Image (cartoon, rainbow over all chains, first blue to last red; front, top):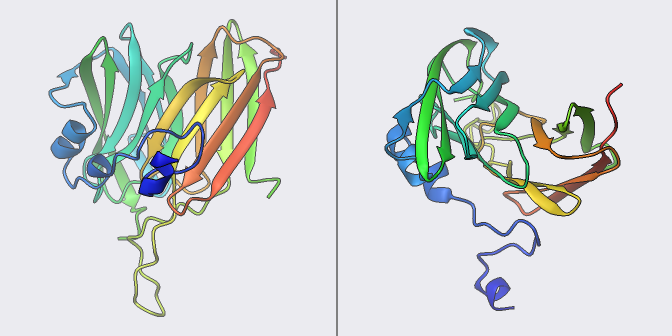
Length: 138
Length: 107
């Protein structure tokens, strides 16, 4: 009752976490990574990214992430040149493999950066994707 | 509303491969309406949780840059045929979405 009274929480039982507005509204990738708790991430080749070299349509770019870093507990996706670089942050638990496959929007050619957390540390890997037609309508 | 979420979960070795497709506009708030020249308000799924037999396996937050009609693929180690996978999601306007499927053996 107390929580609902604040108006900040939704009544959804399992959707308990508060949306990280600070991270999702950050306008550069360094701030977005810091605000999503991936600040100071070390480059790691153990994060495998499957992304096209060229995306004809930025409205729907396939991305597949596999982390080979033991103990990976979360995966976040950033598009450096989007107005708000943070795309999504996935927390994994109870047997979920460190793997995510989805489709993202890219406003223009950009570095796509993935960050993961493992053992309390952050790691990152990036790949440039050339976009022929932008997908954020901006 | 029955077709708002399509799900499939298939065993691959000892891992369940889960694929989910939702129907949602995923409006960024950055597009202008050509007629009114006003920005079309953002409308996007911002949180999504997946459970295996009631236990959370995936807890995600999304921004506006997940593509329209979101697709998500993930894998759960230790799942078995017959296990229940459920998805619940909510968008920034508070609308809730849900779906459930049963893990099936590999073909």
